[in-house]
Length: 358
Image 1 (cartoon, one colour):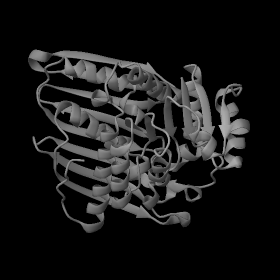
Image 2 (image 1 turned 120 degrees about the vertical axis):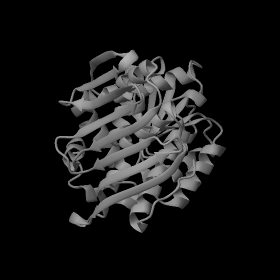
Image 3 (image 1 turned 30 degrees about the vertical axis):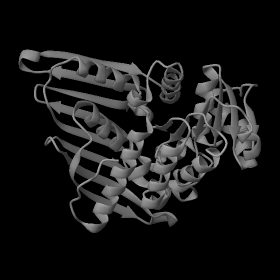
Image 4 (image 1 turned 45 degrees about the horizontal axis):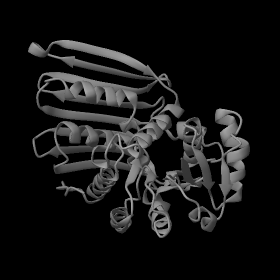
């Protein structure tokens, strides 16, 4: 099996490492020779050790497009995703995963990406890897076989200061050096930390629906250090059923707080991600006639997030899971992008919005 990875930055390194462990042939494309050199000499050796001999590199789209791939990963900044998918779809017909966030808040960018996804010859995925975390999948499996009743509320928090991100990207001296510090480019708390939004919507889709009937949001913006980004985000949404969704995301909290909780008629469920930097802790509790308590912890590292994505990609390619049931299917990631863009618009205009399903 051969994978093409577009982007030699942090995400490209993560995916190259995970695909290498799964014994895939790997070709990395980046138009920047500097980025490729940094991949080879700094990022990969610094994170994982010796660079595998089998990884090939190119800065030529022509050479890349003339290669036969079983799968492609787009691991570039969000404001490049639409243009890249448009370019590679002209010649390459294999399935594609686009790293999160799928696109920028711009409505034209979103609509163009949706059109390209619909026209791509094969299936498209969006890489919200916390959907496929072992803790998330265990929680879902247990809840789907339990009788905790109707989902009443979902609370999601994804708070992490820039410090943690910059530590993983030492070649960036500040958020202004990349898309991270610019809301319009897909950075800031709302889009860069959209795992919170995504997990809340994913859980709602599994145990209720994706039918949003109301949304309100407040956002604190910042132009510090030459940036222009959303710093702290608070969102409240309501489903058609009456279920409430509360989401908080920021780029100031240290140490990071990443968690989700679900309240049902007869029970509660929650996950705390990255506890002490190395554990996902989960707890499921039933009340009344459904009285039980299940709790535990998964030890994990940052590479585990991408290992899980690769496993789910392999399951899809082996026909063990259909695109309609795949947790990484593009429809979900695009809905997260649309929801986030509406939340941004609502905060700017100060009204409550009805969100149309993507």
